[in-house]
Image 1 (cartoon, rainbow, N blue to C red):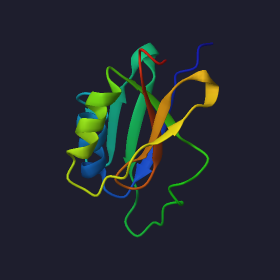
Image 2 (image 1 turned 60 degrees about the vertical axis):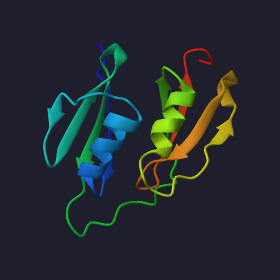
Image 3 (image 1 turned 90 degrees about the vertical axis):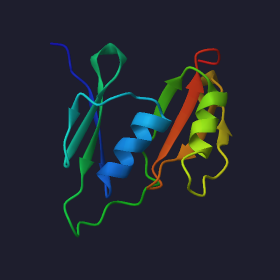
Length: 121
């Protein structure tokens, strides 16, 4: 049996998260797009999903044990899009685990993710 992988991130503001992961991270248009569930198809048949948290439901702290690693075409172009999002975007933090050059950033809700490009991956 082959497992299908769907990574699900609960968010407080699904519209802001949708725009961030679509436009800044570059995941493209979602294949499922509603006010409670957004699904982006990834290479290899996996999906990255955003789920709207129920009203008045506290979310776990954003700096948890889960992080995502996204491969982008260009770290420099990603950095430009990240800076252009119009919020107080902190500097990315270099991280060299697993023998690759990646940079760690928070998304608009503080969830950590890492970015690398094909030349470093």
